[in-house]
Length: 177
Image (cartoon, rainbow, N blue to C red; front, side, top):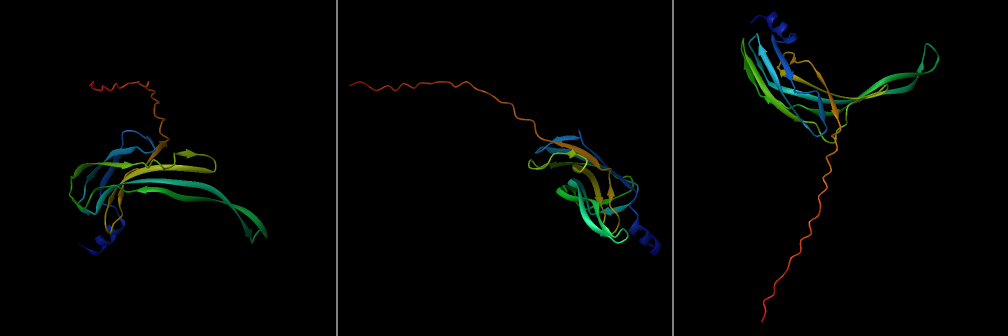
């Protein structure tokens, strides 16, 4: 392999596609998200793993006061603070050797934690859930699917079942003398 081909490979993704299929886009906290990663290859290469990446991020608008040299006064600066609330990378396959024409579907399941936050969006804050499929390759850029945004909601209240109490009297028989 020539030096330039090796150098080019370090900066280009292999010729392959990965897509993520999930049956719906709305999930409840505590629910298992089940789907499949579908991949195909038009080039021969080695992958270190195939995984899904589930992320929950909290983004909040913040302000801080800074001294501006040009204006010679304190000014309010707006910035966005982003925090990862949850991260899960369920691995669907270990190391693979992909050949030209390779096609395979890998099912996966990942739990959305019951104690997580539900999706919301406002002018100064948001909580976002997203998932994507990844083919990891050592020494080259990873191949990723489109990122799918999820709607995560609070679970519906379980139905209240009222049972009538049964009153059962037990009669104890004592033998006579």
